[in-house]
Length: 264
Image 1 (cartoon, rainbow, N blue to C red):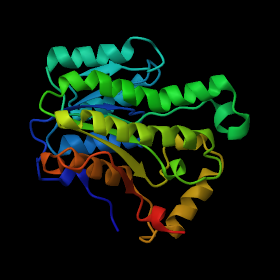
Image 2 (cartoon, rainbow, N blue to C red):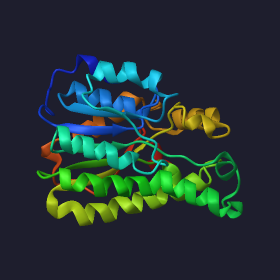
Image 3 (cartoon, one colour):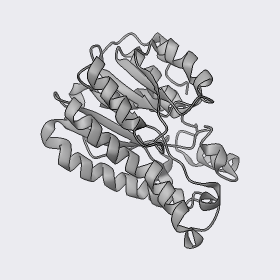
């Protein structure tokens, strides 16, 4: 079954919406699939890049999106996140959606047993992979004066023990719990919060997981549709949830994995 062809989309159902996408590293990034879908459906998209080394890879993608705001964002550098939201407030005065598609764990923490994880590695993993989403929700809230949507990326390893996913599974479980609490707290303001859980994807972030190719093969064989998810599949589904018609859907972990998670 072919993935949606984003450039050929005709429906502009997000016309007038403005949002921030964090986590584009290259054209294989889940964040790029989301940004491309949001733009194709008519939204304006602000984009960040990690650092000067990453900028040349992200700049052409930002240009293709006609991104009016393009800024550095390393969440481990104090003040950079706040600067991004301050700029959005100054130039747009509002925000309709945020896509948080970042996670990180030091190699020694990710590749070791959860039982053996050092405190520093654990804190770094939780800080980048979970707390930053909470902080972005805090910064986005005053800009979402007419409601909005907050999205973060999770994975099946949050609920089930997946070989080699290790401490990241713990962080993603915390992230999914944070989504539910944020949804409860922000719901009265019309702000929806979701965790998007794609099946395995060959992204740069996934390359740090040992034996990842085996995981891809298993996912394709096990999923009812016998197909791997694409970044465009993820992007279209995420963009759909930003539409006002989904205003009563919140606090969910949405699996986009061809049904992989329902199989024993």
